[in-house]
Length: 196
Image 1 (tube, rainbow, N blue to C red):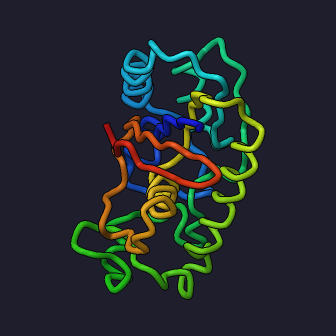
Image 2: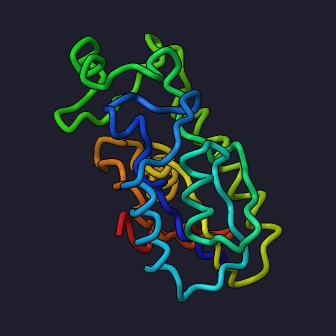
């Protein structure tokens, strides 16, 4: 069984400016984001991670480097943020107003938006994530402890794969530098906690 501690990156510049930030937008951490990553590092300091994976996008890479500064980090593009297509880089408040039919009252993205944004579908994103977990867990030693640094919407998709709820509005995105823990075997996938 592999245990994954999945961390959302700290606050980025685009987060602080309320900009939709998907796979194509690559802004660094703010000073607040760096402080959040240091706090998470302290929470995880008792763990000896077998391996560390991160999205190669700057905000996730910087967060991983702060949490485990001496570790070798494997950057995997499958862990990148959801691709919002033409919506990447736009102000979230403007998108919520112009495309209100694709957001719930908590501003969670609803299915079908890719027809307008020309971005990724949920099934496309989940397929790349399943590919990552299936491939990675086959290579990991038994009882591996893994740190994985990724992105808010991507973490929601991972949780959806595990719970099979197929309803991403049932979860808000994890907070910046929040920790989600899952256990993964070839037979079962279990959510232990979300967004601590």
